[in-house]
Image (cartoon, rainbow, N blue to C red):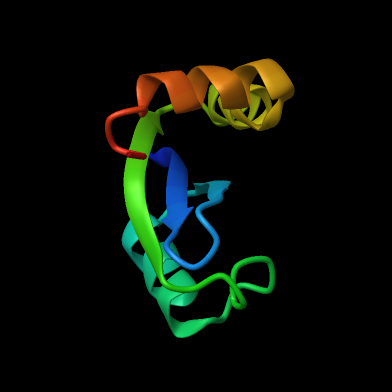
Amino acid sequence: MIRYYVYVLYSQKDGKLYIGLTTNLKKRLLEHARGDVYSTKHRRYLKLIHYEYFINRFDAEARETFLKSGYGHRQLKEILKRTLL
């Protein structure tokens, strides 16, 4: 069974969040840490602050899209407000 992870990284450099989707969370985090991911290579160092696990790709993609939307991003910040202090 393929697993899908929607994850949230916090950039210690600029205080912004990065939201992504992967089937291999450990490998993807290593790619971010090495600077292999174009959209985050200039925002290192990144910290994993939240992830969600799905068994259905469509559910994972829908969740990622929602979290990247304005309302979803605000909701995520509210949920993680103590983490982001």
